Length: 551
Image 1: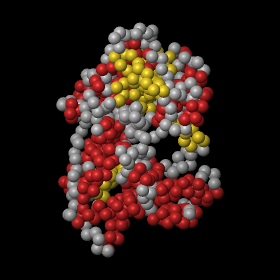
Image 2: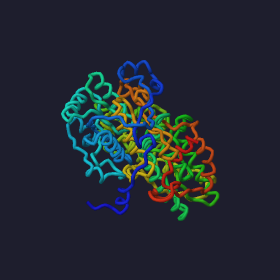
Image 3: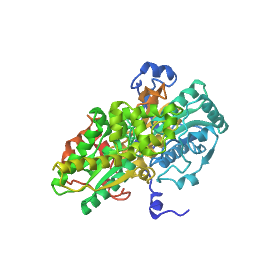
């Protein structure tokens, strides 16, 4: 296999560990915990793993001996930079517990556990993946572990391989499933521990004990480099407005972090749109107003950041999408009639006639291409696939239409030309930053300590992340502590509560205090590529979000 010069050098990098993980470790138990909401319901569902204490690791005088322990690991959901280092941390940690310990990787995500597809991860195999991006070491998948027959099938192979602990590396849904699995195996006295690790580039798996999910740092640095490059191009050519959609369907953490790093002219925050109940008209007016002000100063260019999930946070759009889902529900008479119409304009007229007056007016206000997208691609549940809607194009085209009206009224005298971009997959498998390489290795090592101490139903936690790595605080947080009850597919289910952008939080307040200046003036910042070698102030810095939150 041919590897790049950078990969050769990165293979030599030894991730930094907190002081408490460098030698023998003792666990200090903290307070008993309860779920963030719906305590009674969560406690009933998790009688064996609810109310467990917070755990903090401290350096111990002498190591405790332990026998060999076989561990399984699963990568679940979308990729995030640093996943390979989590696995490296687990491997090194269990080998330190006992050199005879073995690590097995289940292939292709949770489905590999159910289908008994696995491989032993050896030192030689693992070494090629240290400090690299991607999940290709064992692959990932989106199978949800929710049914008891899946748990039982998984238990068969765990028993066959003598696996005593399973680590699930994933986001909020994957870690919810890990907790359900931990509870089930505990209730059956199966002798299998389950530990989770917090992964998602979206940044929406966070709380007081999980300061950030891994991958967020690297992904936002990759996007910010690209945004900075585009800002420099815009400032050089001075003739385009660039509308950039960024990943983050359920929350706007990526958009906010990239705005803090690059200082664009516009950045929409979905949570603020929902809080203020802003309409699509108001959002378009806001952007058009900034374009007009910049044009009046001779600046016919700019950069706007748009979160992927914006559409679902606009109240009127949410209602429209809900009505469309009902009208075009699979098997309905209206769906059959809609499909029989071949002309797209007639299709739009048919749909408009079935909507409520308010939704019909909004639907007809949309550009034809976007209206077609809303009625075309459906997911397996028959719902609009919001992630496929080109929100950046929608806003750009509507702003263009608004500026045309403003020009007729003499309120806009500039030029408006657009370029559209979507940054998503570009950031998910980048080589992890030093921060993520260190953080992920520490998370994996933390998971190995939790396993060695016989813990189950916990998520690995590493905190104090704005300090140097040796001062980080490792430990474990019960997954039930992060849960509440939410309606999913018509049923109330326990889930880890998603962390949205806090409008009274330091990162948003800093952004809000500066955005008017960034809008009218050209205050672009060009972060450049991730630096892996050099001064710590450049190479090891955490996200602006973390710095502001911990200030």
